[in-house]
Image: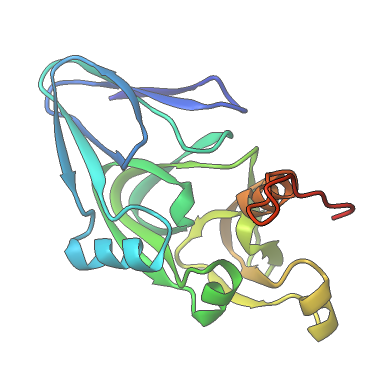
Length: 233
């Protein structure tokens, strides 16, 4: 298997060359094109129950598509949002991944769910992230640029929930409110993610919900039939 990330970093796509018998699994809707004789199987990664948890309690489809090459083939995958793509090799480790940041994986990798608590439900309407573990590798995508942060033993960092992409599964982390109650209610951050090293954390430089709220200020209002105007932030 050979792969490369093209058109990076703003509009990245993943280009994979598969030898006969090799297989790649991706999120539903990620396929841009494929060349060659390829079998396609649609399934719920990690089993039906885990798939239903992702679909009902998250924003992602419960279905995944697996592409198995019959001959030398090429597969192009692209995420829904503009931004970079990053590869995480797995040799038995576990990674926790934002569900909207999962693009694809290969090898013997199990996809489960990581419980975020009800604070995650309040913060983003989701109580689960994805948990990937096994032998192989996973490609994750970012909205905007992608930064890797390495934390020493005992070192802590606080990240906005919406900018989280992935982290090693053995790191200590918790979702908590931003500052005191005044900051929590008026500071524009809500809940944040606190991560403790050692380990590696991936974050994205942009977040989709704030951008969607910005666009909504200039979309037609259903009530008035005109345009919604808003000043300031």
